[in-house]
Amino acid sequence: MAAVSVATTLTRRHALAGLGGALVAGCSGTGRTPRTVVVGASPTGVPFSYVDPATNQLTGAMVDIAAMLAKRLGLVAQFRIVPFAALVPSLTTGRIDLIAAAMLRTPDRERLVGFSEPVFAYAGALALRGDAAGHYPDLASLRALRVGAQIGTRFVDQLHQAGVVQVVTYQGLGDMLRDLAHGRIDAAYGDAPILQTILRTGPRWHLRMPGEFRGPAKEPLCLIGRKGAGLLRRIDAQLHGPARADIGPILTRWGLDA
Image (cartoon, rainbow, N blue to C red; front, side, top):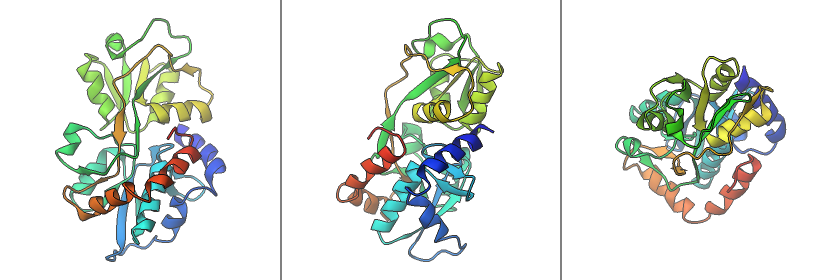
Protein backbone atom coordinates (compact mmCIF):
# COMPACT_ATOMS: atom_id res chain seq x y z
CA MET A 1 0.00 0.00 0.00
CA ALA A 2 1.10 3.58 -0.56
CA ALA A 3 1.17 4.51 3.09
CA VAL A 4 3.57 1.68 3.92
CA SER A 5 5.94 2.56 1.08
CA VAL A 6 6.05 6.22 2.07
CA ALA A 7 6.42 5.42 5.74
CA THR A 8 9.29 3.04 5.03
CA THR A 9 11.13 5.71 3.06
CA LEU A 10 10.68 8.32 5.74
CA THR A 11 11.61 5.86 8.47
CA ARG A 12 15.02 5.38 6.91
CA ARG A 13 15.44 9.15 6.76
CA HIS A 14 14.24 10.05 10.25
CA ALA A 15 14.63 6.97 12.44
CA LEU A 16 17.28 8.59 14.63
CA ALA A 17 15.98 12.14 14.43
CA GLY A 18 12.50 12.16 16.03
CA LEU A 19 11.58 12.47 19.67
CA GLY A 20 8.21 10.81 19.29
CA GLY A 21 9.32 7.20 18.88
CA ALA A 22 11.45 7.32 22.02
CA LEU A 23 8.64 8.67 24.14
CA VAL A 24 6.13 6.21 22.73
CA ALA A 25 8.44 3.33 23.51
CA GLY A 26 8.84 4.61 27.03
CA CYS A 27 5.13 4.76 27.80
CA SER A 28 3.54 1.75 26.22
CA GLY A 29 1.57 0.79 29.34
CA THR A 30 -2.18 1.12 29.48
CA GLY A 31 -2.56 2.86 32.85
CA ARG A 32 -2.80 6.60 33.29
CA THR A 33 -1.11 8.59 36.01
CA PRO A 34 -1.51 12.30 36.82
CA ARG A 35 1.58 12.92 34.68
CA THR A 36 0.27 10.99 31.66
CA VAL A 37 -1.11 12.78 28.61
CA VAL A 38 -2.77 10.49 26.06
CA VAL A 39 -2.13 11.81 22.56
CA GLY A 40 -4.15 10.60 19.57
CA ALA A 41 -2.69 10.72 16.07
CA SER A 42 -3.83 9.33 12.73
CA PRO A 43 -1.74 6.62 11.04
CA THR A 44 -1.87 7.95 7.45
CA GLY A 45 -0.89 11.64 7.64
CA VAL A 46 2.75 11.46 6.57
CA PRO A 47 4.81 13.56 7.33
CA PHE A 48 2.69 14.90 10.24
CA SER A 49 1.66 11.59 11.82
CA TYR A 50 1.97 8.05 10.51
CA VAL A 51 2.82 4.54 11.66
CA ASP A 52 6.46 3.52 11.32
CA PRO A 53 6.25 -0.02 9.84
CA ALA A 54 9.55 -1.00 11.48
CA THR A 55 8.26 -0.35 15.01
CA ASN A 56 4.47 -0.15 14.53
CA GLN A 57 4.57 3.12 16.45
CA LEU A 58 3.45 6.63 15.59
CA THR A 59 5.96 9.13 14.29
CA GLY A 60 5.96 12.38 12.30
CA ALA A 61 6.28 16.13 12.80
CA MET A 62 3.16 16.60 14.94
CA VAL A 63 4.07 13.56 17.03
CA ASP A 64 7.53 15.04 17.62
CA ILE A 65 6.06 18.44 18.52
CA ALA A 66 3.64 16.87 21.01
CA ALA A 67 6.45 14.78 22.50
CA MET A 68 8.68 17.84 22.86
CA LEU A 69 5.94 19.83 24.59
CA ALA A 70 5.04 16.96 26.91
CA LYS A 71 8.68 16.65 27.96
CA ARG A 72 8.91 20.41 28.62
CA LEU A 73 5.76 20.20 30.77
CA GLY A 74 7.09 17.25 32.76
CA LEU A 75 4.45 14.92 31.35
CA VAL A 76 4.64 11.37 29.99
CA ALA A 77 3.22 11.22 26.45
CA GLN A 78 1.28 8.05 25.66
CA PHE A 79 0.47 7.93 21.96
CA ARG A 80 -2.53 6.12 20.49
CA ILE A 81 -3.30 5.35 16.86
CA VAL A 82 -6.74 6.78 16.04
CA PRO A 83 -8.35 6.98 12.56
CA PHE A 84 -8.57 10.60 11.44
CA ALA A 85 -12.37 10.77 11.48
CA ALA A 86 -12.44 9.39 15.05
CA LEU A 87 -9.95 11.87 16.55
CA VAL A 88 -12.43 14.54 17.67
CA PRO A 89 -14.97 12.03 19.07
CA SER A 90 -12.13 10.30 20.95
CA LEU A 91 -11.11 13.64 22.45
CA THR A 92 -14.59 14.81 23.45
CA THR A 93 -15.40 11.47 25.11
CA GLY A 94 -12.17 11.44 27.11
CA ARG A 95 -10.43 8.51 25.43
CA ILE A 96 -7.53 10.82 24.54
CA ASP A 97 -6.35 14.15 25.98
CA LEU A 98 -4.73 15.73 22.94
CA ILE A 99 -4.75 15.46 19.14
CA ALA A 100 -1.45 15.69 17.27
CA ALA A 101 -2.29 15.24 13.58
CA ALA A 102 -2.80 17.09 10.30
CA MET A 103 -6.13 18.55 11.47
CA LEU A 104 -6.62 22.20 10.53
CA ARG A 105 -8.32 24.77 12.74
CA THR A 106 -11.81 25.57 11.43
CA PRO A 107 -14.89 27.35 12.86
CA ASP A 108 -16.87 24.09 12.93
CA ARG A 109 -14.18 22.33 14.95
CA GLU A 110 -13.78 25.33 17.27
CA ARG A 111 -17.37 24.78 18.42
CA LEU A 112 -16.41 21.31 19.67
CA VAL A 113 -12.79 21.43 20.82
CA GLY A 114 -10.02 23.82 21.81
CA PHE A 115 -6.90 24.70 19.85
CA SER A 116 -3.39 25.67 20.87
CA GLU A 117 -1.43 28.48 19.29
CA PRO A 118 -0.58 27.50 15.67
CA VAL A 119 2.55 25.45 15.05
CA PHE A 120 2.29 25.43 11.24
CA ALA A 121 -0.05 26.48 8.40
CA TYR A 122 -0.81 25.13 4.94
CA ALA A 123 -3.47 24.98 2.23
CA GLY A 124 -4.99 22.29 0.04
CA ALA A 125 -3.38 21.05 -3.15
CA LEU A 126 -4.59 19.25 -6.26
CA ALA A 127 -3.22 16.11 -7.88
CA LEU A 128 -4.08 14.87 -11.39
CA ARG A 129 -2.92 12.06 -13.63
CA GLY A 130 0.09 13.02 -15.68
CA ASP A 131 -1.85 12.85 -18.96
CA ALA A 132 -4.88 14.82 -17.70
CA ALA A 133 -5.90 17.62 -20.05
CA GLY A 134 -7.48 20.92 -19.07
CA HIS A 135 -6.74 23.97 -16.96
CA TYR A 136 -7.55 23.81 -13.24
CA PRO A 137 -6.78 27.09 -11.49
CA ASP A 138 -9.21 26.69 -8.57
CA LEU A 139 -11.77 24.41 -6.94
CA ALA A 140 -14.61 25.70 -9.11
CA SER A 141 -12.83 24.30 -12.18
CA LEU A 142 -13.26 20.79 -10.74
CA ARG A 143 -17.07 20.79 -10.83
CA ALA A 144 -17.34 18.28 -13.69
CA LEU A 145 -14.80 15.86 -12.16
CA ARG A 146 -14.89 13.00 -9.66
CA VAL A 147 -12.66 14.36 -6.91
CA GLY A 148 -11.22 12.41 -3.99
CA ALA A 149 -10.79 13.88 -0.50
CA GLN A 150 -10.09 12.47 2.95
CA ILE A 151 -13.15 11.86 5.08
CA GLY A 152 -13.56 14.20 8.04
CA THR A 153 -11.25 16.88 6.64
CA ARG A 154 -11.74 20.53 5.83
CA PHE A 155 -11.13 19.71 2.17
CA VAL A 156 -14.40 17.82 1.73
CA ASP A 157 -16.27 20.95 2.88
CA GLN A 158 -14.27 23.18 0.56
CA LEU A 159 -15.11 21.02 -2.44
CA HIS A 160 -18.83 21.07 -1.65
CA GLN A 161 -18.74 24.84 -1.09
CA ALA A 162 -17.13 25.26 -4.53
CA GLY A 163 -19.97 23.32 -6.16
CA VAL A 164 -18.15 20.02 -6.70
CA VAL A 165 -20.87 17.34 -6.57
CA GLN A 166 -18.91 14.13 -7.22
CA VAL A 167 -16.78 13.92 -4.07
CA VAL A 168 -15.38 10.48 -3.22
CA THR A 169 -14.09 10.15 0.34
CA TYR A 170 -11.14 8.10 1.60
CA GLN A 171 -9.61 7.19 4.95
CA GLY A 172 -6.14 8.21 3.77
CA LEU A 173 -4.48 10.12 0.96
CA GLY A 174 -2.33 7.18 -0.12
CA ASP A 175 -5.39 5.14 -1.09
CA MET A 176 -6.86 8.20 -2.77
CA LEU A 177 -3.78 8.71 -4.95
CA ARG A 178 -3.71 5.02 -5.85
CA ASP A 179 -7.30 5.28 -7.10
CA LEU A 180 -6.39 8.41 -9.04
CA ALA A 181 -3.48 6.62 -10.70
CA HIS A 182 -5.80 3.75 -11.67
CA GLY A 183 -8.48 6.04 -13.10
CA ARG A 184 -11.16 5.47 -10.47
CA ILE A 185 -11.32 9.22 -9.77
CA ASP A 186 -10.30 12.22 -11.89
CA ALA A 187 -8.52 14.35 -9.28
CA ALA A 188 -7.38 14.28 -5.66
CA TYR A 189 -7.60 17.24 -3.30
CA GLY A 190 -6.06 17.35 0.14
CA ASP A 191 -3.29 18.50 2.48
CA ALA A 192 -0.54 19.99 0.32
CA PRO A 193 2.40 18.71 2.43
CA ILE A 194 1.00 15.17 2.57
CA LEU A 195 0.30 14.99 -1.16
CA GLN A 196 3.77 16.37 -1.92
CA THR A 197 5.44 13.86 0.38
CA ILE A 198 3.61 10.85 -1.06
CA LEU A 199 4.28 11.91 -4.65
CA ARG A 200 7.95 12.54 -3.85
CA THR A 201 8.74 9.41 -1.84
CA GLY A 202 5.96 6.91 -2.59
CA PRO A 203 5.11 4.67 -5.55
CA ARG A 204 6.10 5.99 -8.96
CA TRP A 205 2.60 6.76 -10.14
CA HIS A 206 2.23 8.96 -13.22
CA LEU A 207 0.67 11.86 -11.31
CA ARG A 208 1.28 15.59 -11.17
CA MET A 209 0.33 18.65 -9.13
CA PRO A 210 -0.73 21.43 -11.56
CA GLY A 211 1.24 24.61 -10.99
CA GLU A 212 -1.69 26.88 -11.89
CA PHE A 213 -3.91 25.59 -9.09
CA ARG A 214 -4.56 27.88 -6.13
CA GLY A 215 -6.68 26.59 -3.28
CA PRO A 216 -8.22 28.62 -0.47
CA ALA A 217 -5.88 30.43 1.89
CA LYS A 218 -3.57 28.63 4.29
CA GLU A 219 -5.18 27.56 7.55
CA PRO A 220 -3.48 27.06 10.93
CA LEU A 221 -2.38 23.69 12.25
CA CYS A 222 -2.52 23.37 16.05
CA LEU A 223 -2.54 20.83 18.82
CA ILE A 224 -6.12 20.14 19.86
CA GLY A 225 -7.54 19.54 23.33
CA ARG A 226 -10.80 19.76 25.20
CA LYS A 227 -12.34 23.22 25.51
CA GLY A 228 -11.13 25.13 28.56
CA ALA A 229 -8.55 22.48 29.42
CA GLY A 230 -5.62 23.57 31.53
CA LEU A 231 -3.37 21.47 29.30
CA LEU A 232 -3.90 23.81 26.34
CA ARG A 233 -3.08 26.85 28.49
CA ARG A 234 0.15 25.20 29.59
CA ILE A 235 1.01 24.32 25.99
CA ASP A 236 0.35 27.89 24.87
CA ALA A 237 2.62 29.21 27.61
CA GLN A 238 5.39 27.02 26.19
CA LEU A 239 4.65 28.08 22.61
CA HIS A 240 4.86 31.72 23.63
CA GLY A 241 8.19 30.99 25.31
CA PRO A 242 10.98 28.43 25.16
CA ALA A 243 9.29 25.74 23.07
CA ARG A 244 8.73 27.99 20.05
CA ALA A 245 12.40 27.77 19.09
CA ASP A 246 12.22 23.96 19.11
CA ILE A 247 9.47 23.77 16.47
CA GLY A 248 11.50 25.07 13.52
CA PRO A 249 14.11 22.29 13.62
CA ILE A 250 11.36 19.65 13.91
CA LEU A 251 9.57 21.00 10.84
CA THR A 252 12.84 21.19 8.92
CA ARG A 253 13.72 17.61 9.86
CA TRP A 254 10.44 16.45 8.31
CA GLY A 255 10.88 18.48 5.12
CA LEU A 256 8.37 21.18 6.06
CA ASP A 257 8.94 24.92 5.68
CA ALA A 258 8.94 26.62 9.09
